[in-house]
Image 1 (cartoon, one colour):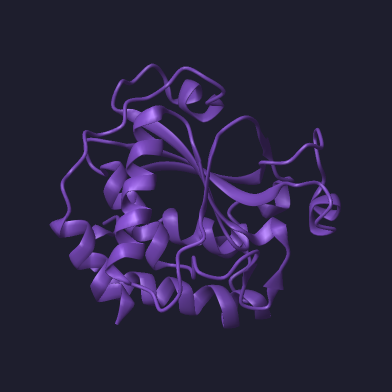
Image 2 (cartoon, one colour):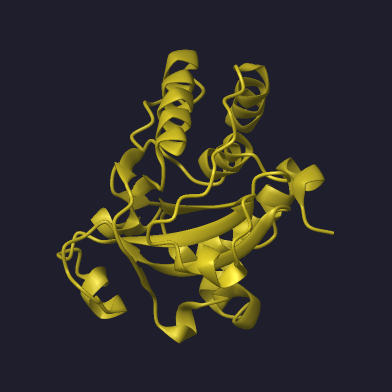
Length: 213
C-alpha cells in the first residue's frame, strides 16, 4: 500500500527545479565529461549490494558505485565499516541524467525500495552502517530531499515516521572491487537469491515504466 501512497505523493506535490551538477568531489561525473545534464547523489539504504542492483536498472542512471561515506575514518575497509565504529554508511554514489531522471523521481524510487522508518537497520542488517541516508551534493538536492521527507511524514505514507538522515556530502570512498556490480556477478549466491532478488522484483513491478530498455 505504501508504494501507491508514495507514487501519489510524488506525482501530486509541487515539482522543484531539477538539480544542477556541482563541481565538488564528484569523480564519477568528471570521468563522464563536462555534461551539464549530469548530477551525482550519494544514497544509503541498507546493504549497498541491494541499492546498486536496483539503481543500475533505472532509466537515466549513468553509473553506480558502491562505497562508504559519512564517517570519520579515512580509506576504510569493508571489515572496518562492518564494525559500526567508523561512522560510515554503506552507500551508492549515483550519477544520473537530469533530463531523463529528475531528482524527485530518483527520490521516489529511493524511498520506495527500502524501509526508511527503521533507525540504523534494514531487515537483519543492523548498525549505523546500514542507516537510511541521503548525502546531498548541492543545495537544491537538500531542499527537495527535506521537502519530500516532510511530505511523506505529513501524509503518513508509512506507519512510522521517516527517519532518513539528510546530510551534506563530504567524501566518498569506493568499496573494494569485489563489491562492485555484485548482484550481476553473484546472482546465484544465497544472499542475492533471498534478499536482493525480491527487492529487484518488487522494484521492477512498481516502476516498470522507469526501467532501462
